[in-house]
Image 1 (cartoon, one colour):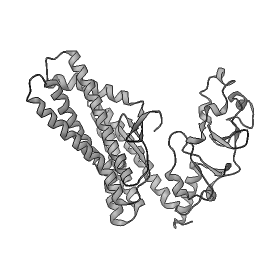
Image 2 (tube, one colour):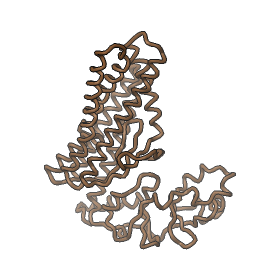
Image 3 (cartoon, helix red, strand yellow):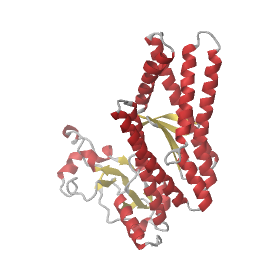
Image 4 (cartoon, one colour):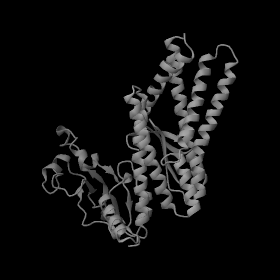
Length: 380
């Protein structure tokens, strides 16, 4: 996920935090400290409410991390490579390779909600235990709130629509029953689209009736729609691109630029200026003619004029290590599994050894998919 900060590892899995996480802490801390706790326990000081609200929000963040960690650990036990875990305002995302069997997909999907159920049960039990002792009213309330929120997270995540865990469960069961993975993915994605539309509608209806909490629900619905659409598109591409190799679809000759020239010089050269380029992404070559990164032209316009004389193209490009690369003979279906979303997903750079021989853009993939679907055979 873009705009995330790598902060360490959890059980060996890279852990990142999105910039919206502080927003999550502030919103839940404010809601708990200024609304929930004063309603449950009136008469406490503002300081007590504030500290308890922030503590509850941080505990909620840790419980969301436990949810995502369960996905990651289960996937690793099943031999599925896990790339990273990212926490953000709507929960978390565990990025991993696609499971190779429906049983593994099912176990990975249910591990998160089961962990949230366990955390919720432990928090509720601890809260009820503390309630028996004197002077523990505020910690008791925080734990009870944490328990109920985790139960709600588990139940919500089990709704049968991708990208929620319940959608993954339905997808795994349908895959197991029919043997058709892509059909199961499309069905789960369709469920996600319907759920997202319902969430947006309910959220905006709540806003119109004066409840601003509905805005959060609408944002969540929009996110579900976007991811569900992307997953349905990915499933369709996987189906129609079977047997196609990178060399069959890559475009050439490749428009490149030297990575050592300054941004201003690139603007000044008519053949290389953004206004004259055919693509919005241009591969860069070093002094020895080897690919060194990917220049995203829309980012150049944001560079202040005073810095364009000193910044070189390689300073503002996506480095090769973050670009998606493949060999001409690689199957596109396998290449797309490894597309890197953090800045250099598409285009895909096709390299023969250390030489750039072609690029594959999103437009190339769309055109190929449309041609194969129009022919109706899906086999080329």
